[in-house]
Structures are given as structure tokens and as C-alpha cells.
Amino acid sequence: MLALTRRKGESLVVNNNIEVTILEIRGDQIKIGITAPREVPIYRKEVYLQIEDENKAALHPDGMDALKKLF
Image (cartoon, rainbow, N blue to C red; front, side):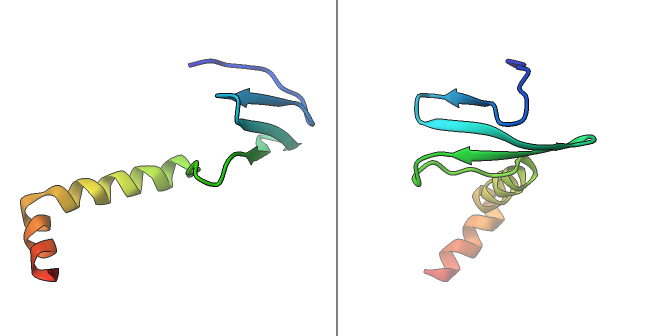
């Protein structure tokens, strides 16, 4: 993991096309802005983990049977 120190208004660039900017700092909360191409999906980690779990469940044999019934 790379750890960086940034102040309000400062940014960092990821992969030449994603910019993360510190917008606001209030106590232990930080508001960030992300500028990225539309084709780059951006999720909060807890949402991403839920999506992963749902995808894994769909691959489970019971999930495959349910998908086959749809078609």
C-alpha cells in the first residue's frame, strides 16, 4: 500500500487518467473527488465487496440452476 499525505485542494493521479482530489477535511472525515473516464467503474469498497459476493453466489451450482431457469 502506498500512503501519501495530501492537504485540502491537493490531488494525486493514478494511471495517467484518474485524479483524486481532497475536497474537504472535517475531523475524522475526508471528502474526496474522483475524476476518471466514464468507462472506469468506481465503487465504495463495501459496495464492491457486496458485488463480488453476489457474483460468487451466482457461480455457485444452485445459482447456476436458477440462471438456467431464466433462460
